[in-house]
Length: 400
Image (cartoon, rainbow, N blue to C red; front, top):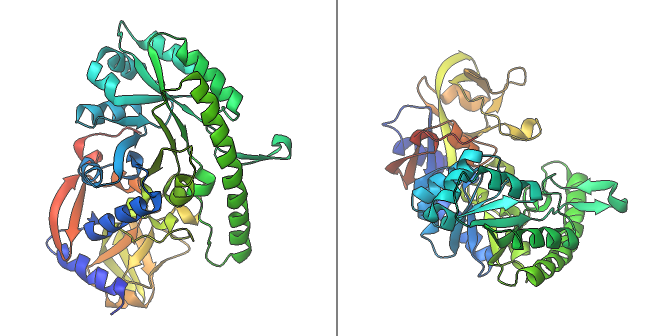
């Protein structure tokens, strides 16, 4: 029996009393992945990206482990909800235009002390001030550095279009704007190098493309390490008491941790290890989050149909954004249909061994987005479900 076949047997035994569709997290794999993130961070604390987890119970579990500290959230409403739930160190990773949320933040000492918001433009400060509605609490802010690699005088760009702040001078100028503005305190710098941390460098069947990605990432790491250090020096001249410099992502943990200017690492997808993280040479994780769909039809030899399954992930549309049939091994989509809204035909010889009601296990493409499809996660240890916990959706929270 292969390791994957053994996992299928365990998952089927653990969930035999449960009807699919359902989602699980294998806690042995989850904990092993967490330990690997800490190992690669080499002594620097790992801030957990909540968008990649979207389950309070699992956020609490990982933050109770040595080596993890704080949450990186994705909306202001989520940040406030987490702070009210007892999480006391929440960094909002994206700017917000949530005026009602800013009014709550500025009026509540507990929330203002727990949540740090992201800015990359003086207009963000203006919006927050206009939204205060009488609230007088000091708002903690973080500046985001654009990590993109710019070549040929900026005519060629590699990296996500995020912050407009690219140079040390630009960040220092905004730091001065924050420092001289009442009601704000600059506490950190963040930089997410998605073109390094979020792009696999070992694309199956594409050796030349993989080589090109590795060369690009090596050049980007060198450029960013030098520029980030200059940015930190420039901002610390304005705000010597800067609390943190956050960087990284699951795919670049050990590289970012090696930079002296970085004080903490952000990561989250590496806990669940969705399919997009299979193509990395920098680390190997264990798939921890899966979902199961029930077999509801047997249309013919070598074919079964499962209920639903069409759960594409965000990003540029493509096959890599689709979930993949994982267990039993050897199933694939019908190229004329793919994963469907209500039903999904699956082809392959293993289909002939599947009966109506059997489970087919899938892996999602992007980590936390799976939790937008399910209201609960069944936590598996060995061949037992030891707990069932709500996702954000299960708690009635849909932030985006």
